[in-house]
Length: 349
Image 1 (cartoon, rainbow, N blue to C red):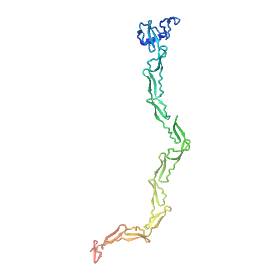
Image 2 (cartoon, one colour):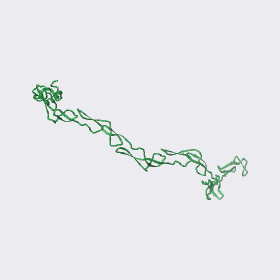
Image 3 (cartoon, rainbow, N blue to C red):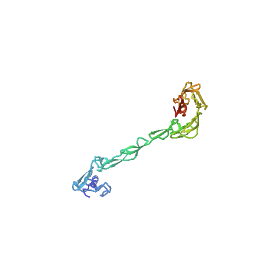
Image 4 (cartoon, helix red, strand yellow):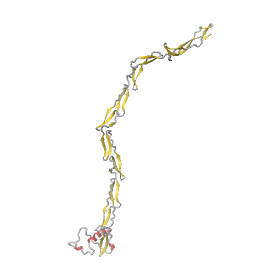
């Protein structure tokens, strides 16, 4: 070891200056004999010739070469100093000439940082991804970039219409409702009422009184009426051969026509009897023949003017067909057409 070894000498000098007399006279009488104690308080004496032989003793110890020995004089207790450790604070000199400080408290009371200390830079607050506690008890919180943020939200809906669902200080809270109207989510029920936490409802009636449908109920869609085939009754006595058609009962209407254009014909649904009521005289009517014009109802029936079908040709036989109207048939050749003339090919000659 040389006198220029700063690290070692500085340590030795601090303790030597406190435990040895400047002149060294009492060193041999400090115990039962002249042998130094083996404890850490007695350090070997460092010889010196010039002040330069006494290395730097630290921020709390002044070293000097006195009578060939390096002697340390500590600074006043509590004097400010620096131990060059960023993890201590309030550095001050001790009675042993050492510079010591209290450990820096690096806790920032933030659950989202991991707190430590670096002797060079001081407190370090590294971000973590821990689960943390936020203000909403009904949400999951997680550390993000040093902040406690909502990671997911919990819905308090328990899908029970008979509970009042709220988010309280301790999380989701469910309170039962009693005798309150409710909807059980079933399209086949109605009139729901809450009883002891359950929604009690009555089944709906899906019968549409139609014999041509099969009536069922679907919990999501409600009443369904599927068309069926087959005979049925439409409840009308004035129809016959009733049959289901596209979900409806359809029958053939009973024919009550009496062939008289001067009566109004109808069927009595209750008795199924055809009834015929005379129309007022003078009412226009249909004689059923295109050979009758301007027909009206009279006590004698539907009477009109006979349609004139004479085409003015004596060699044709003129007539009227009730369906087709006027028609002319050529007379046979040789038929007399007047004035001593006869018909030839429908021409009077």
